[in-house]
Each structure stands twice: as structure tokens, then as C-alpha cells.
Image (cartoon, rainbow, N blue to C red; front, side, top):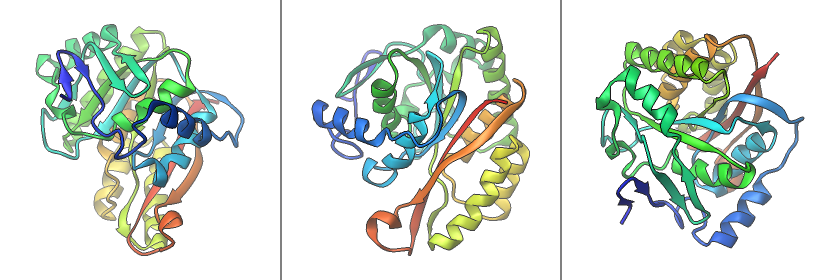
Length: 274
């Protein structure tokens, strides 16, 4: 069973990442390679493919980023299940490494702002984008409580409303909340085409310009699967102060398949106070 009450059991163990607890812990530890100075980080963009493809980018990004003990994790809805904005509001998420607590105070505040209809499990039913980040949180950080938000809408107004709600909640908790967006970059084009498209998206993210990101994805046909949660998140972040946005790492699936044809690319981005 994938679900038992308000506990979500792992669905993608042995598919996207190892299902054996010891092997999983060892794998994540090996991926947590720190190549940059550690910073207190308020925002992360990390990829969510199988660890063999994108785990190195994710690991390098987590490794150099100290985050708050309270985290909002947003990912795209690849499946079409659930509400346009699906918030898992209580209980636990379980991986082979154990349980990760849902931060019920933060989820309650978000629901109070966005409406009861956003309390939804179905959007998370068969979605991998948030689950694959959980083992990194469990291994890298001593204590984290989180709120998972699966974003299935591409409506700009709705995304900005979500961003406004997140910024209100972060302010209420005195900025002691980090935001993580789970997203791969452009899909299934040649590596050099991916890089050009990804640079346009990353330029907008670097400026924390939600409108530019939204528009450039459409104009340049960038298949960044998590651009919608990223639009909401950088909109929130832009209301919370001045930030330094840094690209930690960039790669693509062809590095592992030895082909530059039809690759998926991955970026790791962190944001911290200037």
C-alpha cells in the first residue's frame, strides 16, 4: 500500500533510487560532494531524475547548502491526479531510511490562505518529483520537517497566489523556512540546444523574475517540468529580501548514456542572503 492514513510510503524505491536502506544511505552520502562553500540557504532548485542521472547535481547542491529545519518542497505534477495545488498537510512520508515529519503548523497556515480544497493526497499518489528529494533531506540534515506541495496548474495568476501564500507563511515564521523546488530542465533535445534553452530559464531564475521565467518557457518552448512551482517560489522569494542566486552545478543525462542526442538536463541552484 502506498498510503496508510496520513503516512505516505515510498513508491519509487528501487526505481529512482535504491530500496535497501544501507545502500540508499551509502549512495546519498557518496553523492553529497561539496565543491562550494557552505551557505545558509533559503531556496534550492534540484533535479528529480533517477539518482544515476541527476543524483550528482542534486547531491552537490544539497552538500553546500544549510537549510532551515522547516522546509516547503514543491514539485510538478507529472500524473494529472489530484488538485491543481495539492498540499499534503499532516502525518509522515516514509522512505527506506525512515519517516520524515510533515510540518502541520506550516501546512495549516497555507491551507488557511489558499483554501481547504488544496488539502489533497491524490496529487502525490504516483508522483516522484518530491519523493526522490526526501532521502537527501534525511541524510544531509539532522532534523527537517517539511510540507510537500504538488503543483499541477500552469495558470500564472494561481502560481502567483501560491507564491504570495508562501511568502506570507515564511514571514510569519520569521524567515525560518527554506523553499526547495524539484525540477529537471529541458527534455529530449540535443545537449547544445538544451543548454541554450536552459540558460534562458536560469537567467530569469537568477533575477528572481517570475514573469520572465513564465514567459521565456512559453516563448522558447522550454520543457522544464517544474517551471510552474519555480515561478511560484521565486515570486515568493522576491518578496522576502535581497538574495544572491548561484548555479551550483549543471549536467545532462548524456553524460551517463554517452550520447548528446535527446538528453534531459539538470541544474542545481541555491539562493542565500547577499
